[in-house]
View (cartoon, rainbow, N blue to C red):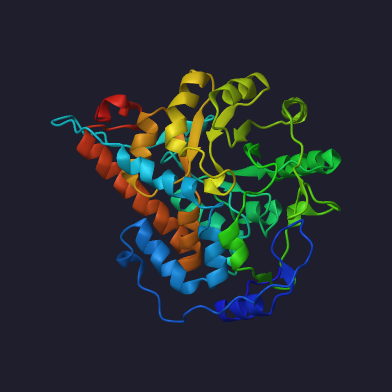
Length: 392
């Protein structure tokens, strides 16, 4: 494995790149990535919350990379709702409770976790930092968090596992070529992944207008090692033609028939789909609207969560992502029935700001805020958080 580029070399390569972002899209003319500010970044201890981390990252990321990470679909209404709906939920304090055993650890799919917070799959980490997913894995491991590696990562799972000190899950996009799909499943299982999260909500991308207004190029040699062998796109989206990828319930049953690790379905917002998914063999449901990047104006994930939890009825764990920026958001999700949450954009901003240390710092901020919220609510453990902490 080649040694990682330093930041100057990395930004120079980004500006000179010639491979278009979009794994399966044809090359198109696009603007080069502008080199961001080189001002000395603030010390980590001055980044007090996740918005501070994003603000710093924005000064350090090439503008088009920031837009790629931050943007959503169409008018970005769902993207905004994901955060706003958490703010509308009020908490009800309980006082004079025994907090001597304060502990935010939990167990998920038999795995002990020091917080109910996972790193959601996000693509192309080397756009944000020269060490890419290797830095993310190191940062997650230093904290003790589970990282969910994206199919669209710039680093192969074998290299990620070589530096990971904590369990790694894998997010799977199902290829049109089912033979390649099966080969990838077997590959990641052999590499040691502990679970596979099958994305089910994106037969094609949403109308990502903001992202498309600031196109950029990838540097030479930067690719997607999990997509080796793909010769045709899973979906086509042009002004004249829209052809979605075709993924059906029978495909879920087919994958479950040979998958050796737990399978979770990522992108479930409909309670009926959750029920059908469990019957098809899913061992976990991830309530997600793809970070507001696919179907705009669908509800926020925290709105969909209670309905999905009711439909699941305790048969499998339910995880939720989208819009989580505070420890109080984690409490609200747990109170409404989530077994755990996933964060996406925030840790990418941490990665862009400080590499592995930035990823760890984002997780530490959330853990601190979570423990503070639990203390003020009179909930010493994750198991003690329930709907009684929600203001009615």
